[in-house]
Image (cartoon, rainbow, N blue to C red; front, side):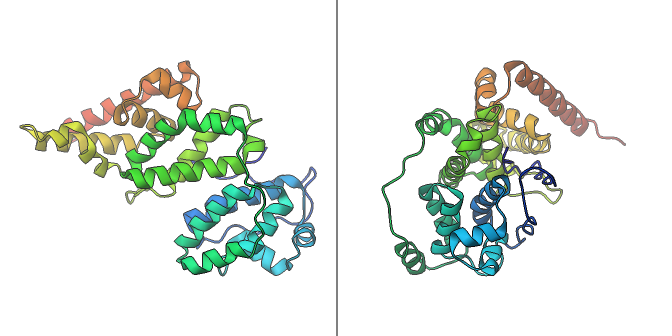
Length: 299
């Protein structure tokens, strides 16, 4: 199974046995941007699962080992679409979502629009691709709650919709693996979380910073008497939610920030209703404990 990127869980080490041959490429360069990693991670994972060596990919793509190695590491200059396309074609990956992901990363790498358009023009355009019907149905089903979750962390509709669209394109790239996973909804949810967490503002301790989301709440927007007290209390609550373990945080955000019924939360995050209720119980207990600690700090 291809590992799904997740900011909360690092990728497992590849086994030495099995069908994989040759030496594993070096890790992705730390300088690679979030948008660059969005397409590079699944491409690498497909390569690892395929059993192909770097030499095999060189033979199939027609590019040198040095250039292919740099592409797989996200090292050096941002790769042109022509070499990127040659690699995904060799791996059997769909070009349409990949081109959107590549374009977004090129813009994040501050490539000029003229350069981007010229790169794309160098590759012959085939028949338009359409995602699998099951992928389309899944996207229609979860697009709303996914966007609500992303907005809670990223604050604006534009940023939220952009990250959700990125998630669905990466899911399309990984669809052959995702569709046969134990739970497609869990697979896709972890992917969404990883893309959101790659861009969220953080505290110094590494926890997501949800304080700005307070200003989107009805209590603060209403400006009712005592709203400064409400503001302080909400900031504390949102900080406590952000510090929860990732599953508890997901459930708390969907329930308390997005207003989603608990049974609906279970379907969205890909957990059983019983597990979701248990997670919600632990999250509420942790939040109550944090509130009690703030009200009665130790001397």
